[in-house]
Image (cartoon, rainbow, N blue to C red; front, side):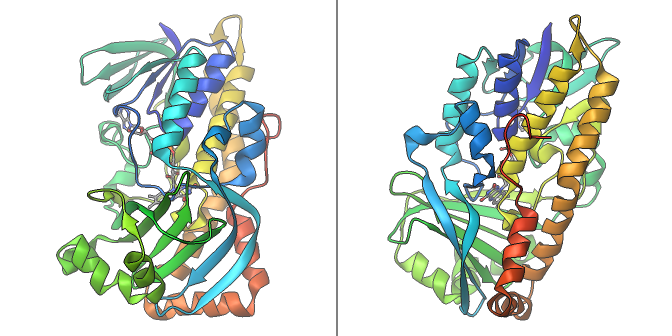
Length: 378
Ligand SMILES: Cc1cc2nc3c(=O)[nH]c(=O)nc-3n(C[C@H](O)[C@H](O)[C@H](O)COP(=O)(O)OP(=O)(O)OC[C@H]3O[C@@H](n4cnc5c(N)ncnc54)[C@H](O)[C@@H]3O)c2cc1C
């Protein structure tokens, strides 16, 4: 019997496992894939997490992540707006970062099972029973689900956010090109936007979000890109001047930004499984890390005499999570509306930015958090 079982080894699962294991709990982490692997993500992490990561030796300095403190936004037709980012961020691929964190988890005493897909989580009288597709069964006193934006486990748990299909599709490439390493760009195209920024080594990340219907209409990704995306001259220039590293892009469907329950049938949700901020805000990974920090603190503080006070864990986690994240997720959805849509609305966003750079900065501030450490995570 483990103290804690964690489903999913992305950022939130890995960081939760490390913190909880270092707090003396026995932790098992179950990940369906094998590290290292790619995932759809813009791979820009807000600097708000740096004090916390450095405090726990989890900042990936050995990989020299790109340091990013400038932002360029362009409209579908290519008019653009540049600004400095007050806080900024760093760029590192999930391929590299997650694999390194997985090795840190193992070094911290976490029992990590890769290629282990969780198929059900059932509550018994005093413990949880976690079954996997490989027929291994795990038991724990507390269960955390860090399974990301969408997983079969959501279906198994019948989570309400699945009732409505989501039209959003995400696509990612890694490329080699020549571009300032300190600048993240957000280029609009009809019905979506594309982020571009430096990660480690000589690599850059291209990641875009669009509607499923547009892809269907175009017939293929290649034709969608040439007929819609590359109408933005910045994106055309990027495509023409880049060497694409993958044979084919990473793609995910059905990305939902709908509110989700934080605790479902006693299972503590963390990271995107608890709620996903729109990628435009560039802050999902920071939120995944911070929610892991909040949850680990709450679990640590409500464990006495070898027993967990689950009711207190639920209420404290809900209070801290809501006070920190609920408004940010809502603001992210409002900002996405401004950028996601017709050519006209994206131009408005850029013109507004030109006229009111202070408003743009305030939007960035509202969707990003303040730097935090373990003590101030909540
Ligand atoms: C298009 C796009 C661009 C983005 N760009 C950025 C960005 O630039 N900056 C930023 O901060 N955020 C960005 N995000 C958001 C960011 O990727 C997420 O917020 C972050 O990855 C959340 O981490 P997580 O740990 O919650 O989930 P994930 O990192 O998705 O990890 C979930 C893990 O659970 C595993 N899993 C799922 N189901 C099971 C199961 N049944 N059994 C076992 N394992 C399972 C998965 O394999 C995965 O490893 C972007 C998102 C999208 C869609």
